[in-house]
Length: 293
Image (cartoon, rainbow, N blue to C red; front, side, top):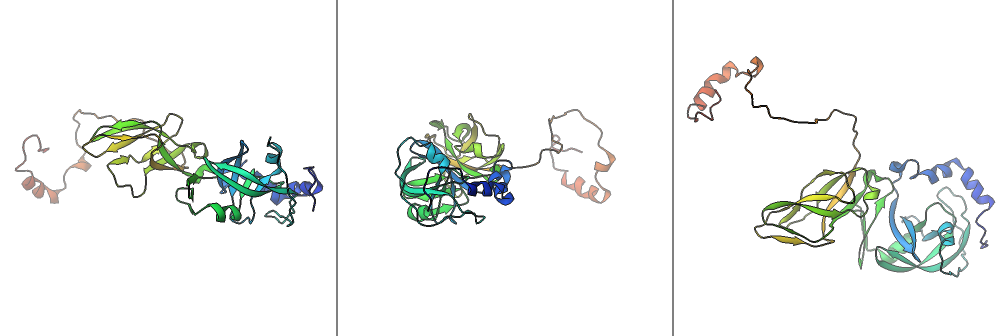
């Protein structure tokens, strides 16, 4: 088993020359909407790492590229099994170590293998069995004993993420207010998103469903159906958003105006003969202003 620390070798050259492997490496870079990998962001010794969540990988991995950028010393232990990528090519392995992984303020100590690979890191089946209770694919969240971990899909076209209140805000009773919100993973969504209230949300506050273009100053309409005012506190989860990827090369209505001038009714819009008697009888008791005849 090779454990030397030189990252370049002939095996890596073979992988790069493999057209299937090369196209796999480009997936999510050149054509992001094709990448359906499940990801979450974390830190290893304060180094930002994008983890691919892969239940098909028996072990959790960290790329040698990220390992080289860690400032803290890590003592690597030898790795006995031989690792292969999805194309069957042998991976160059440097060792394994217990490392601290911080994911959205949740700390884990986990044993990972350091190897040459395209993703920053992979959270494999060993990590999921040890730390994850379940995965909600509707909201793209991993559920742990200490809270939920928001994830995203590599291509933004199918991304779903939560909407939280940015700052404390009081909503008067029986009113609609614009509430400043945070969409933590908006950078992984398409330009336009569909916002919607939480499933099975049964209280007096209701997020207005619609399509918005998210940015750092996004505000969303929220209705308070109750008689009494209510306060939404910072970081309260009030809804979900989902990427939409709709074509824009079709005619759009730019302006609607109300013309109050009276115009002649086209002949095609007059009352048919067989409805004349019914109309005359039903409009007989109408007030003058209600009678359009």
